[in-house]
Length: 135
Length: 135
Image (cartoon, rainbow over all chains, first blue to last red):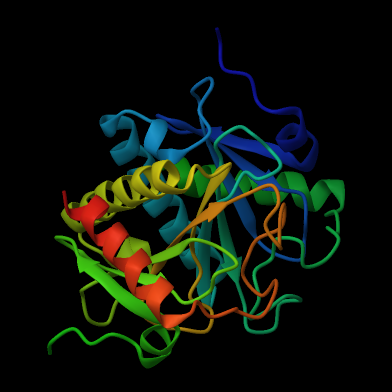
């Protein structure tokens, strides 16, 4: 069966790019620069369910996305998390955190309602991130 | 400089075992079966600051600990997170989650005050986990 993005992830994000293993999504929440990596594998809910070579590829892509997003945003700290208590498709959050962001120093999940970007800003940010991540 | 465990991590946990890269700690909070992996490297705050071979080793150990803890606890979901907004030493949470745990389906961080195990239970649990993780 072909990989299909979970509808909840689809609703909350826009697509940035596909890396080798993961689809990269930008969360439509201007409270935080927030990317989500989704391994394009069906029926996978836990990191340890991936094959070993996929686990290493996931680590490569997490590390790449985290380093690029940190540099791009000049973040104070990167937060990485694979939770999936509500969305049953394996996905990894990579979030740039700032000492003056609305949730600091707590986690962003469940902290505050999302605040959507205006459409132009959202598209421009996705394009900038696409350029940085794929070059 | 030799690796030294951050005092906050030391205060909140007991040691389970050392794997090749990471020290494994058990959080003293009976609300959740909760392990913490701390790469024994000085001056590292972000996953992407590790060398590539250390990143893969970290992925091996996260995957191992997550699979063992899931099986041992029969968890509904594993949560994995590297946050470090407050503790500046790189550490990775691996938490067994249950649909009837106090924070479900929200993250455990900041959800509720920790509830310490009684000492005997804490030591017995650490020993069981040590056996499972190192065999």
